[in-house]
Length: 357
Ligand code: NAD
Image (tube, rainbow, N blue to C red):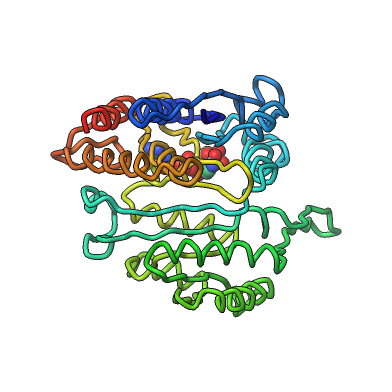
């Protein structure tokens, strides 16, 4: 039996997470897998209920589970809290750190039915199939930071720190993932300006000697931002540091038609965490407009990476593909002539596909 910690969080989190849980229930029946779901508080919801964005019980539950499913955290209600108490900093960062999740996998696959849902031209995005591997526990978000009074104003700083060990482990994972795909790894940095990037590049080059079958290229982050919207098919696996990965993967989501289509897995510790790439989308929360597919595809990643149930994972991906081919769309991927459905209808359609085949 697999124990899954379920953290819906804020905004659209409580709308999309139950759809993914119900998909797992269908998968459990179909493949003879038993899941035990335990829900816990996180983010703004936890601040409101118990005064803390990541209650100790929640972290404990996650540590004692086989996998974690997270919706999203944050929203305008908690935006004015001091930075250290806000859901994003006080829940997500310690959760990642607490579980030792140093690697975030963000696959960007454009389902053929959604080629025209992207604002980019068909000939540019068609065939997009890449994966952004983002380092998750180092760099700017975790380095020494501060804000101090100065005689003529204030001074604020964040520090981008990486150690050889941190770079080696993420680089190694990048090569291993590339090996299972099309064997090309693009390491993204800013080595023309940043010293931390020079260490990054030297270290990736050294690790590369262990993987002669994988083609390695280096790219500056500014050029990468441009290449991603110019010729995304050139990429297979992109490995990069925390902040660059954060920004580039949101950009990449446009290639998939909507950020509501992008799943993610955070791995590296004993327990992995699965969540959609997007945030809590307060602008559409509570209206049944959220696309649950990123979360549903995140549980497909859970089946693959945590439970080694590859057939079940690909069953979900194929079910999503069929639902999209039949023309069903949530508002974020809707185009004229398609069938507009709500969050829960989209979830039900995927489950029906799974039950039929
Ligand atoms: P967001 O990803 O929540 O929303 C960006 C845009 O994408 C919005 O227009 C939203 O409606 C749309 N969108 C996002 N998910 C969607 C879905 N599943 N279906 C359809 N449309 C979707 O980013 P934001 O607006 O910058 O942030 C909102 C809040 O979420 C903030 O408090 C932010 O800090 C937080 N956030 C949390 C996480 C996380 O929990 N991992 C990640 C990013 C942002």
